[in-house]
Image (cartoon, rainbow, N blue to C red):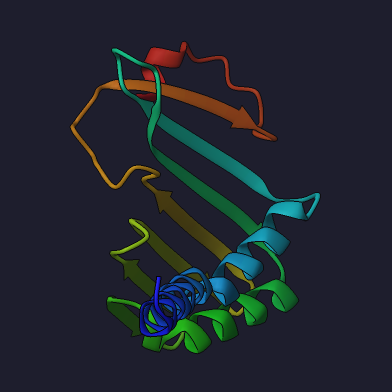
Length: 158
């Protein structure tokens, strides 16, 4: 291998590494804020995972977090504002009582949606497709983390 081939290979590796790091950091502020919300003891978490019926691999996960916290609401709002330019599609709407954000990151197959009402009531949803495909599989696993017990059959909640 001659020196120009080595240089080309190194340049290609550097470009690839930079491109990957930019993509990974694209929603790092939002994900960091969501991680902080998820760790709070008063958060209510709903999680729905869609699996391929043939191989049981995860195709899509939807997580919704609900919490009341002025500090976390401000952190989440700042995170969405910081990551807006990296989103492939950003939708922001607000009125006097609430602000809503919906951001799509196509290369990572993720979507984040948050509503902050009265400066502290947070509902944030995170959708992730690990393989970038959604073939419409109907097998759904529902977890009820930290939710109040309901006396309804599971099918009544679908």
